[in-house]
Every structure is written in structure tokens, then in C-alpha cells.
Length: 71
Image (tube, rainbow, N blue to C red; front, side):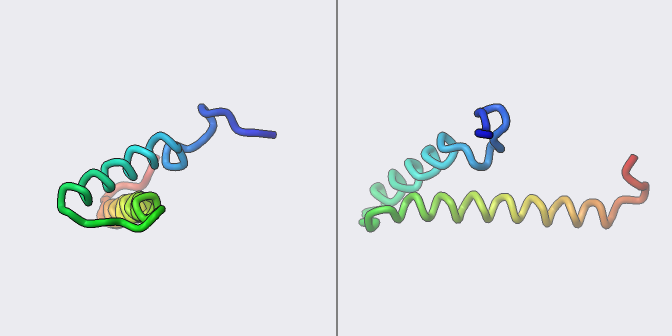
């Protein structure tokens, strides 16, 4: 059974990954850095993974500091 776009998590969205890759490529070009083929896509995927991981750490810390149980 294939997933529809409504069932697919936003983090796996090709639009999100493409937008991040384009932003990285533009920033690198403005800084005068020549990226190898596919590097912008790899950096975008790594950046998205980093943001997700930091978000999960933030949630864990917040829950650890919470004074009331989740209801």
C-alpha cells in the first residue's frame, strides 16, 4: 500500500528537502564556495536530521522538567 502525501511525514517531504538544498546551494554560491555534485542535498538531509534530533532532545528535557504528568 502506497502512502499519499497526507500520510507522509512532513520531514520526508521532497519539497522541504528541495527547499533546504536550494537554500544551501544559494548560500554557498554567495559565499563563493563550490559544492560537489549532490553535496547540497546531503547537507540539507543532515540539517533536517539535526533539527529533528534537537527538537526531540528539547521535548525530552521539557518533559523531564515538567511537574505534572502527561494527561
